[in-house]
Image (tube, rainbow, N blue to C red):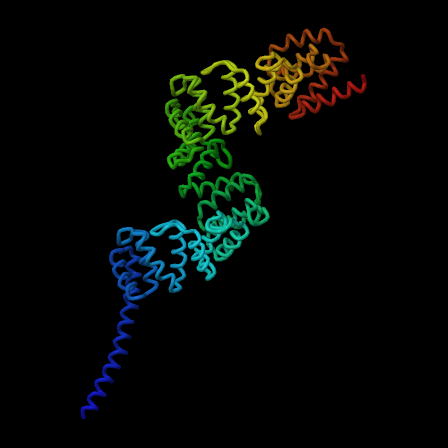
Length: 506
């Protein structure tokens, strides 16, 4: 009898154990769904409590979610160390999202010492298991050389895997790789295709860059209207570079009707987000009274804001304001200071103005050598500043700061004259008229002075005197040369062809 009772007790225990475990598992399942529902409804306090219970009971999904809540400070005080703890626990159990999250924690050094190698290891594990976020992150690691040797081809490979899954961030990154020719052969059409996919998903950076491609006709048919459309879509999502570009489009009437008030509106939005070009251009709008009541002090304020952060055009503009006393007290030394900062960054207009201040002794001691130094930088830089070329011609002609050298003066006058600079054209004409450094040639002198007179009426008297000493054939030949040299970008070509022809005939 005793044995029968004992057996019955054991059976009941086994049955109770099976049923009890099933009940607990059922309870856990319900609790996890409840936790998810609480999280989805943003009841973070309840969600945190439920996920914590489940996590402590070994539920890996709950462990990862608990890590997220500690990371973001949802329902609990933000604590990166505890976020790391739960991510790590779930990651070692093979949880895909946790492995990616652990990679992010290691990469950023949140709650644990920054360790790029560990970041790469965990990110790669998740990426190899087709975690979309991990594939993107691994692509960025290869792109930037973080935790791995920089490798654009590998970056492109991982971006493509995520992009093929429809992720707009990865599509944008892949588009930029094609645009820049990094890891793949540069291909604007492919760039436009991927950017379009991301832009259609309202990804603001892709919309902005797609606008740039339409503006430049790269990979797509050039269209100012399409450029404005996509720029606006990005700007309406508060992307500062798009807000700036939209402001510029309105200011210049490109792809949309010119509207200075709208231009100021968008420039102000971008400027308030710290976009330096927007701040600089907003200063210009206030200085000119475009779209706003002219306000020199506001112009100086926005120019200074951008200038102090290193924006070259703003530094130059602020220098001009100090020279003219516009919005600030006139101060040549301050003007020279801002010109110098912009000039050091290669801004040609600032280099020219700094050279001019050295030549004239404004805000500093007169120094021809320094003037020549800055003029030369401006004259030979990618902008080929014609004012600086002309001033170099004057200094060499007059022998100021350098030995007088008509050939070098001619060199610089020629370059400026070829860019349509009337003073250089007239000086070059007078040099040919007087035979200084070149063989005297009245026909060439007439041709050059005739071009320059359209911009300098005072040359008409010089031309009249010159014509009195020329034959009709010479005048006719001078007019033909003047017409040839007057074609845009053709001055030096026509001049050299004529002088070479005269050498042969002579």
